Length: 330
Ligand code: NAD
Image (tube, rainbow, N blue to C red; front, side):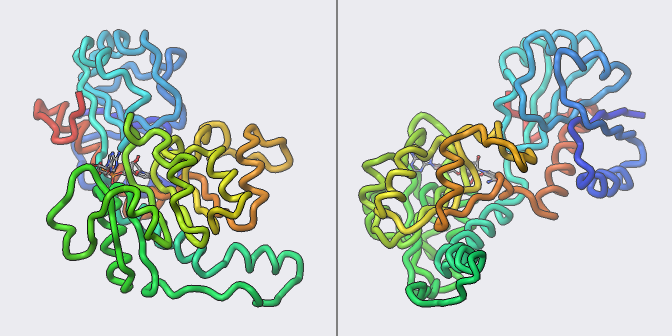
């Protein structure tokens, strides 16, 4: 019987793991909460397959140890795999797999939720209510079908978000390096700067690469309407956070919703109640009533978690059975 060890497992993943296990009685899945590190790698002895999901990089000495223990693969149950060194994995005959698209809808729905939160002024109403101020003056909202939504990066998630906004009657414009003919019924492609100038909401869905690092910088923000909102569901470093803070402070922008922030590995998914925050940028953003912050939870839905578990375990099993998984990245 193939034995797969699944690491960094959260309690909320157990139901999805049990559902996969029930469909694969010939495989034994063991779960553990610890991460794959040089200090823990010896504990993987006796297993055939490995599924991970972790925030810290895997040290170089782990790869030859896994090879020596007989492993043939490492399956990440995430889209990103930057914690892994693909070359070192290859040198040690370890196939690396990921879950490229666990649920574009999960992130796209958060972009929609964040957009509505901003356009309906919900943060500002919450702020007033927290001070027992229940007036509505000055906070008239704009209906979504009267707005132009600008999607930057109309890939799997951006394309799905475009379809959701289009279905609600919004005008959708987009910029991408590659135009997808299948999206032309729901959006109009425009140059990057035109999208920034015309959009009432700019929703970011690019992958993080050299061309997208600080894509939304001081200049980009200066092109946006002062009534516009910025939504970032993709990667923190796509936005120059200091430039965003300046733009918000100077009222060059009406507000922002951020599911991802540079430096988030130091604060997202931690309970920091009563402690000094480790980021001055976070301190400043939190103090602004027109900024929505969620701790990188775009992926965190019932469907996405089940897909992450299913696809990563399917990939691990494929390698153990001598097949080439479609999710192989090295
Ligand atoms: P994808 O590869 O399908 O789409 C990315 C798109 O961005 C592509 O169409 C690409 O051509 C485009 N792009 C790249 N560079 C560009 C540039 N300079 N200008 C314009 N367009 C550019 O990726 P995806 O699966 O849709 O994921 C999109 C982003 O969402 C990624 O950054 C991913 O890390 C992030 N993500 C976030 C969460 C979350 O929980 N918030 C979950 C999953 C993915």
